[in-house]
Amino acid sequence: MPLVSVPGVPARRLPEIRSAVSPYRRADVLVLPVAPGADDEGPVLASAVPDDLTDVLTAFLADAGHTGKAGSLHTLPRPTSTPSVVHLVGIGDGGEAAMRSAGAAVTRAVSGRPRATVALPDGPAPDAVRGLAEGLLLAAYRFTLASGAEPPKLRRIDLLTEDPDTVDAEVAIARVIAEATWLARDLVNTPGLLKSPEWLANAAVKAAAAHGVAATVRGPEQLAAEGFGGLLAVGGGSARGPRLVELTWAPRGAKQHVVLVGKGITFDTGGISIKPGPGMALMKKDMGGAAAVLGTVLAAAALELPIRVTALLPIAENMPSGSAYRPGDVIRHHGGKTSEVLNTDAEGRLVLADALAYAAARLRPDVLVDLATLTGAQSVSLGKRTAALFSPSDELADALAAAAGEAGERVWRMPLAEDYVGELRSDVADVNNAAGNPGAITAALYLREFAGDAADRWAHLDMSGPAWSDKPDGELARGATGWGVRTLVRWLQGITAA
Image (tube, rainbow, N blue to C red; front, side, top):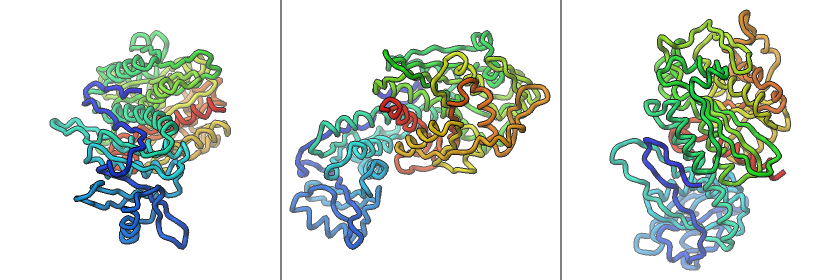
C-alpha cells in the first residue's frame, strides 16, 4: 500500500525496513535488544553479540543503569570504531506492545542518520516483529507546512534475523497499517483553510482509486433529494457545502458486511452556539473519525481481507452565518426521524445520525461501527489515551476491546444506561441533540436511536481525546494520532480469521 499524498501536504515516504543477515561489523549504527533479566540479575543482551563487544557492552549496561524496560534506551558512542554508535534498547517481556515501544524509541534515537541496523531478539514471535515494525514506522511520522523544512534523514532500517521470510511478512503488514495511519494523520493535521468538505471528499476518492476501492460522493443537491437533513443543517452555515462519501471494498466471495461510519466535521466553530476561542483552536481534528475509517477500508483492500467493508464519511463544516442552522430548529434525518436542535455545537451526532440511518436501512450491515471525536466528556472521564466504547453487544464490545489492546489503542467500555434515555425527549421532535450530562453516554444513546435494525450489532467509539497528542508519546508524534485505524484493522483481521 503506497502512502497516498494529500493535496497541499509535502510528499514523504516511510522509512524502508528490510530483513538482513549481514554481519554486525558492516553497520555504522547498531541497535541491540536488552531484556530485564531474572530478579537477582541485571539486564541481559537478548541477541547474539560479537565477542569483542560482549564485555564492553555488559559493563556499559551496568554503568548506565539500564533496566531492560520496554522503550528505555542508552547510547554508547564509538567514534573510531565500527559500529560507531551502539544503541541498547529495552524490550521488556518481548511481546508485541513492548516491541512497539522499543521500535518507537529506536526511531527517535536514529532519526538523524540515514540508515540503522537493528538486531532482533533471539526467536521473536511474529506479532513481536509486527509490533517492532509498527513502532519504527509510526514514530517516524512528522507533519509540517513550514517552508524550507528538511526531509527526514532516516531512509532505511535493516532487521537482523535468521528467519527473513517471517520478518518480511510481518513487516509488510505493519507497513500497510502505518501507511494507513500516516494518511489519517495527514488528513487530520491539514488546516481547515485547505480542508473543505469537497477537499476531503476528493482526497478520499483519490485514495480509494489508488487501492481498488469503489467510491461515490453525494453533494448538497443529492443530499437534499435523499433527505440527509442532518448533514445539510450542519453544513448550511458554510460557503463550502457538505458531502457524504461512500467507499466500498467488496472482494469476491465475502460473506460478511461491516459498515464503518466516521464523523467528518472538517472544522467546528460550534456554529451559532459558538465555541470559546481556546476550545476552537484544534477543531481541524473534528474529522478524525472519517480519517480513521478511510484508512481502515484502504488497509482492508491492501491486505486483501476477505470481508466486505463499507466506510461512510459524512462531511461538513460547522460555521456561523446567515444561513446557519439555529437552536430550536427541527431537523428531519434520512429515514424520517427528527431531532430538535438545542445546541448547534452538538453537531457531530446530527451528521452521524444521517449516516447511521442510511447504513441500517440501505446497506444492511452484519455489524455497524461508528467512530467520532464526539464529546469533551470522553476526555474528562478517560483521558488522552483511552477511547470510550459503547455497544449493547457483549460479543462485539469484547472483540473491539481485544483488538484495541493488541493494536496499542486502549478502549474502556461505558454503559448505555437506560436511566438517561428520558433526557433525549423533545416536545416537538423524536429526540433532542443535547441531552446533557453524562455527556458521552447521552450522546451514545442518541446515536443508538438511528441505528435502526442494526442497533443490536452496533458499536460507538468516542475517541475525542485519543485523536490528538500534545507531545511525542511512544509511537505517537505530536499532533494527530490516526487513532482507530490500528484497532479497526486488527478487529477486521480477527473476524476473517475466525
